Length: 341
Image (cartoon, rainbow, N blue to C red; front, side):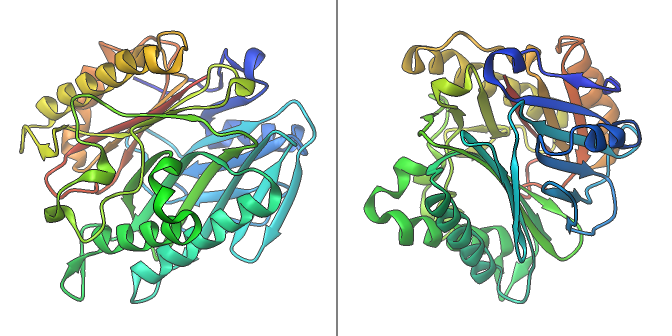
């Protein structure tokens, strides 16, 4: 399934946010035309150049695009957006919404790098008056490799948890938002985020143990995220879906079977959406009509079958990006995440 050349989420009329996705070459002109109203631009499949100098936060995520040329994801607002940069951190805000990104070259201690990133991120949200974290996208270099005998993802989780605990103490779990953490190439830890003046509604999946309550076998600190987040009512119907894989309870299922894992992931998404409606008081969301569905595939040889299986399920209006990425568990072969406006 090919990504449309330009897709603007239909929910933009209700939320005031716009989300445009398409080939980077075609959408580059949109960045110039909408200067001053772009909250965040992310290019997938370009060089590993990290945060770029621009009139808005603009970051390159170097993961390969599996079905074509580099893709561009542009978050915009109809209101004028003020843009700021402070070293490795850039953000834009319009008085209601703040989007930002931090790109940090990692050293020999990914835990410390993650801690400093989250400490700075959370301090920024307090400083600017946007304490309601809604979504975080983490791109972790060499995510499954070991660092001093411990997998880098597990070390990343320790640093991330320390950042939340330093800021919120015993109430840290209440502030975990939707998030994903996948591998990337290069040497930069890339963390993009969205926040609001008000808190969102964080939701969990009844088929899965909450990630922040995983048993110790998954690392000294459990992952600090919720399975999904409904943005504040002032954002309209925005729903952020966390990275979702073939996990039931806390265990990986369908090991070695990419299509089996894809189906289990879709079942998990459906369960999350079904259960979240009553708790949030919002309308029923449907994964097949998401504004953007991003699919991370560990092995490129699995991509054609995964793409074809999803093409039979997704609404043609859904923008889709397929990226090559190592995942947070070495036995996971595919992961889904997305947004519905």
